[in-house]
Length: 282
Length: 286
Image (cartoon, rainbow over all chains, first blue to last red; front, side, top):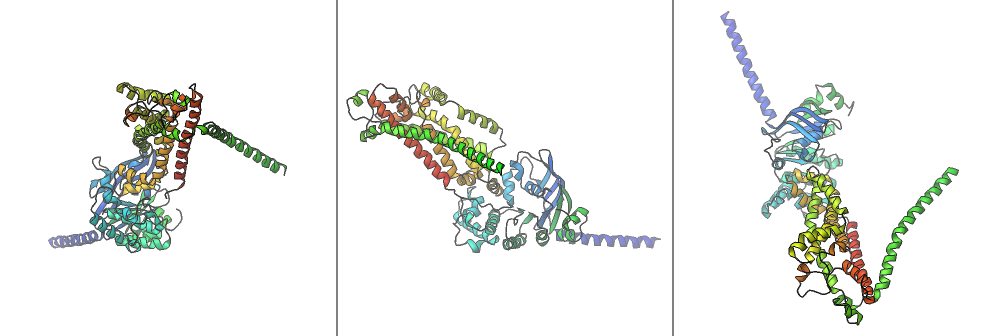
């Protein structure tokens, strides 16, 4: 009798150890949570665009937001650096945490948030009257940083990170608008990187680009995730599969499924995800 | 076939009506220009641009007389108006275009439209109460303030519309790199809208340059150049539209002709401003 109990004890303690090992392995793989949405609901007037959404965004990983048009993915993305602040009708409840602190806390200044969480838009948006150089360092120069040496350095690093430096190094004073579409988009990325953000949000960054430029930007994203956390909205499922570590499938304002990209694309849990991924709708 | 023909005829009739309205606009303008030039050209001589007006006796005795003090006065008063109106008008325009959610925005929009539609003579009255009464004298400054009230609503509207032509994405791009809102407007939106802004100033300037009513009891008028240049700002000053009026109602034939000449100068000044504004808007900056 006594013997049996002992064996069971040993068994269970052995199991705990395995569990612990598994958890540590899991932890190493997932890294830490950089941002987190908690019960986030976003309304435009009475129209609910995102409903009670909760999900983490892991550090140094690429998280893809996918789903059919109008599913709320861009709305969600824009809520992550308070871009809705200027939209009068937008109303947000719930929390968005950055390193555990709510960015919607009334004491938090949205400007400081946006310096930590950068954004790249669907269409390249170089500032029309500025040179390539001024575009890149705009986020520093326009807040009063005048140190020429520092600006030059930041400009070169950011352009190099955005894989644009070699193409433009001889004409940094040319207008930003003189670049090709793909180059302009990489310029926008360089501009976002110049302020050294921690998280980069990308709203369909390659949707207006040709395949070659798209490939460059995708390579860039994979390179950038070594240092930054990236959240990307994309309509291109193949792109999400290629570059993201985690994926979130949204549909009609709901987060239907969230998980590792590999798992979700191979073996989705929800029927709607499966149907979307196999092209039945969307 | 019959209906096709009918539609073609209808089309021709409509086109004809449009041509008629266009001509209705063009003819009076051309008549005015031709008539003014015809009547005033004779008085345009060297002394017209170099001498002050003085008493009517000068003109009647054939002594050299002119409107140099009026032309300088017009520039001074109009410039005072512009300098006062640009910051206020641009500020209001930025509020209208960039801060749509601000609670002052709808009030400003209504007030600005009201100010724009308000008779200019009332703006003169306002400047009279604000400047002439406290200072105890008619002055170029008071005239400038009155004209500023004419220019402000125009500048506010043109500023608003030229800022609105800049895509919203430019502002978002600025915000996304952590720039404060005023900085985004000042350093990314306004430079992009530069030509539109300047055109708006010119249009407002040209509009105000033609106003006589608000100047009657503010800058008042003067037959002479002041002894010192400060007299242009702190003393009564002559301006073209108002001088044109007083010459026209004077009993002297020589002055009548000078009035026509003053009209030529004023007309050319305003036309040059409008044409410059037009040329500026034509060259798009991006």
